[in-house]
Length: 273
Image (cartoon, rainbow, N blue to C red; front, side):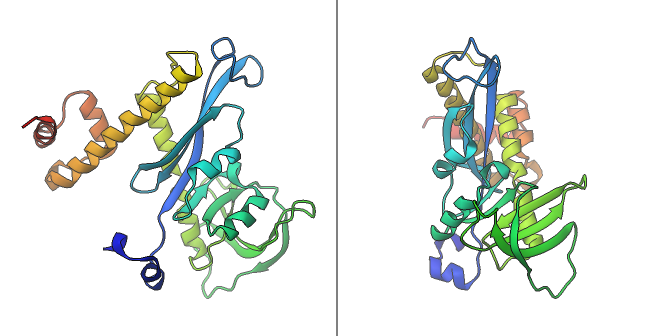
């Protein structure tokens, strides 16, 4: 029902947008293998930039570059204004936030710890901060030379190790605690890239030309998409007692040791009439 609501209805019901998590992963090898993608020293490498719809684990957009390409340059290709963009410090350029505001791109992006805050004004609250939240205020970002045109909301908190985490956003209705929870969803794309590297043998590049390298990356992504599709469809059909996590499904599938109900589902899925 929610997916069929039009935009005015969604606004009236205050149905939040889905979170879109953006990040990249780098794969490095010796310079001799990829001379067309040099990095510092005697290394070479390529990058896979991607965005993931939080909670669903579905890929939204993917693009590829050489390893020395800043993440910020690929952000335009993997974001979407119908989502709330969640990203780390590599995507936190102050001037870009002004563009996001004009383009109606909502975001929650981590800032560098040395970010300058111009004329901060604390936001009013009726309750004390919960959890690790320390501050919630609005300000312009940057020094005089890089000062943002608009004011943005800043939420300061600490991570489990006590390190500072500074989040910038153009969302004003959610609480500071809700903003922090949005950013915590970012771990999902870290898990996704780790899964790609560990299970699909991506760090071992089979070719040296751009077509071979990037073809291998996209083949790996296709395998992930197919497995995720089978998992989502199967988990919705099997009995509650047979439901699995994606990690469990992947492990048992590779061992050819899925529960009987899953085996029946997969057999019927791929049996020709």
